[in-house]
Image 1 (spheres, rainbow, N blue to C red):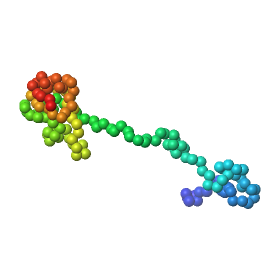
Image 2 (cartoon, rainbow, N blue to C red; image 1 turned 30 degrees about the vertical axis):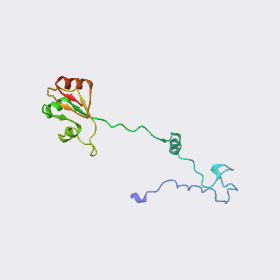
Image 3 (cartoon, rainbow, N blue to C red; image 1 turned 90 degrees about the vertical axis):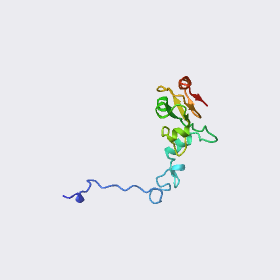
Image 4 (tube, one colour; image 1 turned 45 degrees about the vertical axis):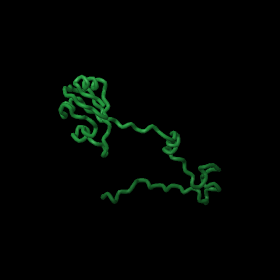
Length: 142
């Protein structure tokens, strides 16, 4: 016996085509009135009902805040000489802080490591402890 010769034991029964007149009577097996007795009736999909329940987002929404790129004091100590200026453009040039989609993001300097050089810091956000260490080393913050 080959696979193409296999046949089921019982024959498949054809699905009854409802709503076409004939010997089933005036309602053709659909019952009387209502949505289910009409032509083209379909129940709404469950997913659509769920989507309709959620409130629609209209009007202005809070814009997403961009996260600042984090730079550590140890990195500044390693890559800069005393008296140099630290700002986002210089950090991007030295490839300490990269550009994201062609734009230089805001920089936040954190207290991780030690600093001994007097640096001038511009246009950067600093943590409280990092600010103290930079000032203590003789640096200035603009």
